[in-house]
Length: 238
Image (cartoon, rainbow, N blue to C red):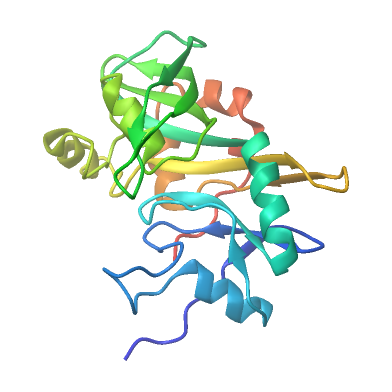
């Protein structure tokens, strides 16, 4: 019999909203394939003692900032504000790229209903390790399609390490031996302007299951300089 779930860490809170640190392996919300699985929606609802409404979604294998409205009336305005705002992700990918190189991945992707929709992700290379054939990449999705960052990086021949659906199983196995045992994708930050003109700013440090292996890479200091949240103490992985 499963015991009570550990409380999710709240990284930012305001009137009508809350941002939690979603750990890897936790669904954002239950679905038809996992109708009884633990999920962030139910955990945040129980923690807050009220109904909450997810404003975006993180893949179960990913981690990081997850925004909920705690007031139904705020769900629509927050969703619109997030579309105009920004989410910043860190990804460990296969292959190398020039440090500070920027590029844009664009092109239609299927959404979860099977329809093709425009998708765009801005990317920046934070540094590479030629010996290990890997790079750290900052990703800023400008749309919110299913598996968008994962599919865009695969199209660029830079699949995310640990991606079981869009990556390379042989490469993933070699990285598991180096300590990366899950999808190396984390939502570090959310920035948006609320309807009343205030700024919502939330940062989520890495969980220690990912921070440990990444901190040993040669390009880690460059990534920390580019993204200050990476200097914060890692969160314990449940």
